Amino acid sequence: MQLPIYLDYSATTPVDPRVAEKMSECLTLEANFGNPASRSHMFGWKAEEAVEIARRQVADLIHCDPREIVWTSGATEADNLAIKGAAHFYSKKGKHIITSKIEHKAVLDSCRQLEREGYEVSYLDPDPSGLTSPEAVAAAIRPDTILVSLMHVNNEIGVINDIEAIGKLTREKGIIFHVDAAQSTGKQDIDLHSLQVDLMSLTAHKIYGPKGIGALYVRRKPRVRIEAQIHGGGHERGMRSGTLATHQIVGMGEAYRIAAAEMHAENDRILALRERLLQGLQDIEEVYVNGDIDHRVSGNLNISFNFVEGESLMMALRDLALSSGSACTSASLEPSYVLRALGLSDELAHSSLRISIGRFTTAEEIDYAVGKIREAVAKLRELSPLWDMYKDGVDLDQVKWAAH
Amino acid sequence: MAYSDKVLDHYENPRNVGKLDDTDKNVGTGMVGAPACGDVMRLQIRVNDDGVIEDAKFKTYGCGSAIASSSLLTEWVKGRSLEEATQIKNTDIVEELALPPVKIHCSVLAEDAIKAAIEDIKQKRES
Image 1 (cartoon, rainbow over the protein chains, first blue to last red):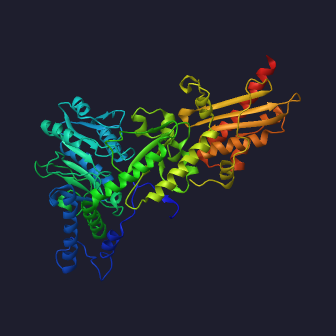
Image 2 (image 1 turned 30 degrees about the vertical axis):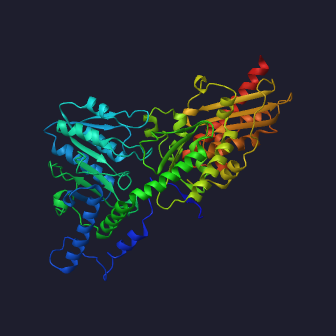
Image 3 (image 1 turned 90 degrees about the vertical axis):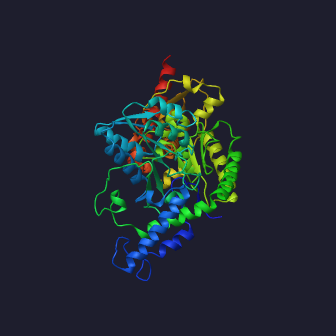
């Protein structure tokens, strides 16, 4: 077993060796290096062919037409293109957008930008388990609503929204439905023939493909229109200009092909590892799982150890690469906005760890992690005045703290 | 974030972890910070009749730098008079532990904690 152990697959994943192999075939003079837009020679034709094979591989995983795939630099760009692109195109119909408070920053910040441009945005509160219900969406719809943007799977807590039910609702009302699927593709079955989703953001690097490549699914029937955000040579049917990065695209295609073939077996294996992890931790006193445990992707566990601060916990876990909802691990001083939106106290948000398991995680690594986490929590509670007070029966909510 | 060796040392081997009897009239307690902010420090000192700090204990909920700041402070105040202990500045802690700018608030909290503990014992003795 190699240390440190990578348990942060929700942040990014290593490229699968099969993917790296394919990518390396698209770089050098002897290989497929051409510009896919070059129509006048063999180099261009070969590159275009590789790009179109990858487009089909991506389309196959989510069951759509390859012509509905627009390459982007990643999910952040896809979110920007979807939200600003649809809002701008349909602005004459209305200027109201619905999203949730626990979306990725790429969605929230795109919405903030639209607010500056005069749009109105409703930010829905998820329920305490982290899900945004179709009822909550229905209640927020207004006559001037043009767009609903919700994530399929949340990046911090891994919970899965019911995009089928929400899609029915938006389609009925003629509202564009955008889904950020960065955390769900290759982990959840997605069938865009039956789902009434109009725009879907995709990425490669969360599913063993390279960073720097993603795509936006743009529905053809019924046709969804977006205004381009990047202008240039008119690539991708005018929706996203820029020379196509053949090696990146081929990598994403191969990653998606592998996901389509291996997803179900892989999910079973990863779920067993997560259960092993949870079993190893759940008998610790004052431990809370954040977010719905049943409607959740198999690789995610978000868990709070009360009375222990997240950054000090991570410091004790230097052999484990994972992330925390504690403020101290980020540039801002606020704890995770996702956990706060679930109604978690600041204390519990500060005490959270996100452990994400993936393709290359082993049972031995999970057992090692369990041992280390138990040790660290015990040690830090010995150091924690809050733990003392809790043990003495003091109600921490009744204490008057000197906030600073 | 990279931690200095001194922060790591105090974090791995915190000095003077524990609790003194708060009902003892020679014990002063300073509890500062708030769980919502991610830091709570409890610093306690036992002071003899000559006004010298004989013992100091702490417990801290917070990041590694907060733990290290309070651990260091307990080492520093032992054997000092109350007057001397009041002179300790947060900047001394920042310097000793090589804290980065984002962690300066940890040292401020430690300074607040010792001041609160000293204040506590003074009030106890006056009453």
